Length: 438
Ligand code: HSE
Image (tube, rainbow, N blue to C red; front, side):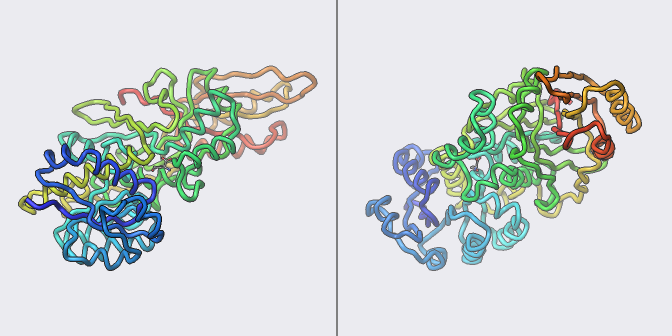
């Protein structure tokens, strides 16, 4: 059978990796797919660089729109990124009856509903394993491997750059800026690194996982998003003294009132496997009602790890290309007419535990004032540490861990505590998740 023809849009880090993996493993890949998979043409703004990379084995053009309309292209791989041109190209490819493979999490989180509807109408596949956690096959696990389960919650380290920064800050006491520069040099960080450190990239990926886990539309605008840029070395150290590590987690959970959808720094007990995921690695903990907790771990970024997911999608699409179109796995795991309108919970209604750090004057009655405010808001303290004041200092750090409480009560308590005259500056609040069996 003739090989399936791929049109590659963008040959940057991941595009180059895809090209290399396909070339290196072609024989084995074609045995798995049942057909060869050939990158027939590449579209890139930098034609010279692209020509050097492909070395004459594929046509190179700077006209991506022409490429997605070519009758000899079966699958379009979009690796340009961003939400503007990539969207137009994908919709054009779908309109031309092409299957699409993309790693574009931002695009899917913002416009996935529109793209999947167009693909469904046209009867083509849009595959996106590489959009979440790079090489970790979490989309396939959620959509197919765990399909027997009612998914209860997902908690994931899904941004390698921020995990790398937190690991380096904890292990080597490195500064935030130095580690970020290193991550950018290694090609982990997004074009705009604020996407990594402010939790936006993780929120894109969480949006996609929640849609597949719960059969809900993509709702990026409802994700509560808080990044790591305000975390201090002290908080990382205090958390460690109390038996926790701080990770940037994407959490989505089914509750009686609705779906939680949140990204924020989180204390996790150090003994949990996921707390020990370091560097640029990603890990996603998924709790299904039948299987219990399951953990998926691997490289979440980088040329070949991400290419591993892109090529897996190419194999999937190639296998389905000749199959009965009615038998395909739905784009978002659930049949499009059976999607749920479960509400997304407002962050104020979310229930979790908290790490609170307060800088206070070391005077009688201060602690009593603080604990009274917490008691008024029905917030129960789980653990507390008061640090000795440094030589000549009048102020001390108090660190508290709370039991489960509602975010709204914590917000009210924090604003009342911050208005006490003995408190200096803002209260640091980091959410805490036990991530046990429930
Ligand atoms: N910037 C992303 C990360 C790359 O650091 O995880 C993969 O999406």
